Length: 543
Ligand SMILES: Cc1cc2nc3c(=O)[nH]c(=O)nc-3n(C[C@H](O)[C@H](O)[C@H](O)COP(=O)(O)OP(=O)(O)OC[C@H]3O[C@@H](n4cnc5c(N)ncnc54)[C@H](O)[C@@H]3O)c2cc1C
Image (cartoon, rainbow, N blue to C red; front, side, top):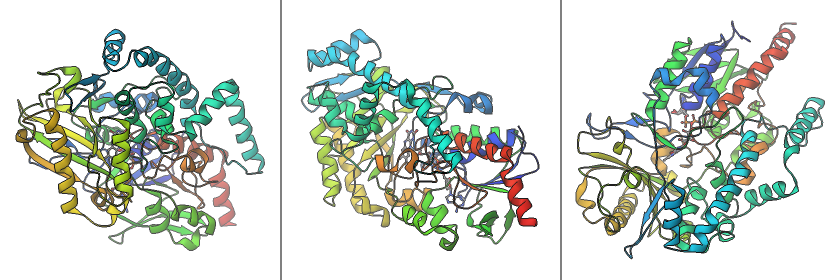
């Protein structure tokens, strides 16, 4: 299938924009990607904040969810995509104990038994339950959400097809999925585990990037979102560090797109999407340059696309209301460090690749993590921030000079309102507290810091286009999932404007570095081309 002869403009050169460009260029389209920043990647970017010696994944830091179809079709390995697998969780505690979750079943059982033998026995039951659910849920990520509630014949067929796809799930599984979407990760974990430490450690993937603490309803799903392994086209890889940092993922996607013929332009800020008679006709850049296009793909935050790049009068009023009330908070702060040595943990001395090359969690118990969220809800930065810490240079020696390291600290929470102001002083004090936490469990850590970079919600919004500071372009709450992402009736990657599609993280399959929104959007664009919808519309306009 080709759509040769058509011109496609992609607004936003984040990883989703690049995936869409590569896949469409490969199918014969003439594609131009327009990226506002000097580099592609969006939130998947490697920067050098401290000069040429260090490379840092400025925002996102680990990858797992890029589907095999994207790898295969875009031949990413050929363009420099290489992953170093990440080890499991490690948490060291103030009382001198530690909890580690190695892949090895026997050793993991021993580790958990230090805190609760009952929990150690329950762990396999938990992973089996999760694996079963992920198996049911994962193919839904690759499913284009139908327009639930629509009575149009084509939409009714899509709804019936979804029901047919779900027929494999029995009553118990449907019940489990319902529980997953509605429960808090805290309540779910308490059904399996009694140890506050294990509960705290396992709650982490339920709160990453969310404006919700572990006791908030819906966080159970966020945890499952991070566990999904196979969306129906093969097993996605486990979490890992891309060699060269996350920017290397974007660079490989860019190289692939260009290889297939796409043009990628940076420092090219789109000012508006041009619309005539309800149909996208191209874009106009801030420079005044206009580019005509048959298809426009918006891979930007939905508030940018629909409230800044379009005239609201071209959109249905109820759709505009949905985008205006789109929730896009998270209270996340990224603290990036250059270190002159690895941290030496008081609870477990010396270098251990499974510890230093895994996820180090700063967060003792579920209650403590919930407390950090409640601080932010009350309008102050967390007194005891939670952090998900990685040291990718343990495996990837391209990131730092010999003997030195880079550390990524993904931390939460600061107040959601921080996106509107820099709050530099408060963020610095907050980052100090994150570092103090590490100092308690790894004495000498503070002295090992050579450089530091603190990226808060305001910088995420103004520099990277992550409005509100939400890392996924919009919260992964049940009210913003599947047929609601980003608005009911428009979760199929189409928009109220003919010829304008959306493929960013605020569409189904996002967020995260998944490429799934772009993959699904391309499927729908090709489907429209096939059905001759665009040709018909063009014909109608001419007559
Ligand atoms: C701190 C942090 C940590 C994260 N950690 C992880 C992680 O470890 N693993 C993971 O899978 N996910 C992680 N995520 C989430 C993930 O990075 C994002 O969901 C994903 O990268 C978004 O990709 P995207 O292509 O949809 O959008 P973006 O990456 O946001 O790309 C959108 C692009 O549009 C551009 N743009 C905006 N306005 C215009 C305009 N007017 N004209 C032209 N271009 C424009 C922007 O500059 C940007 O490049 C993290 C995110 C953050 C912020």
